[in-house]
Image (cartoon, rainbow, N blue to C red; front, side):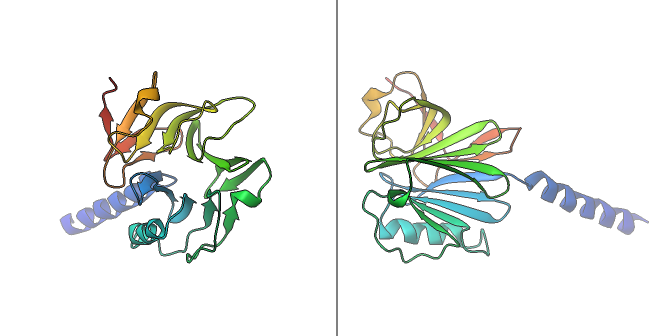
Length: 211
């Protein structure tokens, strides 16, 4: 009886583990510390928010190796001067070719709002009641957007108000401009794990005291 009971318990634990990971979203900064891509993984599917650089694409490919057997479902090219990419994705969205605002559903029920004007772009990922922003350039909007997390901006913009900024640079050039938000830093693929409607857990991202 004991071996059978142990087998049942093991199977139950595996099923429970799979269920607990269902719909969990992993978000990480990948690539160059001063201009990383942002990789979102949910249920084995991937969205890449691309800021530029061949080394960044190579870093993303290495990061995804073993995490997903599928090509990314979507790559959003945030660059001001996009060129052809040597990267395989089911769909590539080039922000310079998009209207000022667009929204879509990505992965398994997440929302992705895309803003663009002139040479600046902003992507805002909605995960339940959490919002994660990734920008390229200092975008200008009619009304500011409030988000939970802003991922590693090259420059701060009044158009985005964040509770927390996640960065891979310990002393970003815009550090003196921060007033009322938290700063999280990690030097190797820092990020966060979100369970829609539940917790948000920081991964390899420590709080940096703002003087």
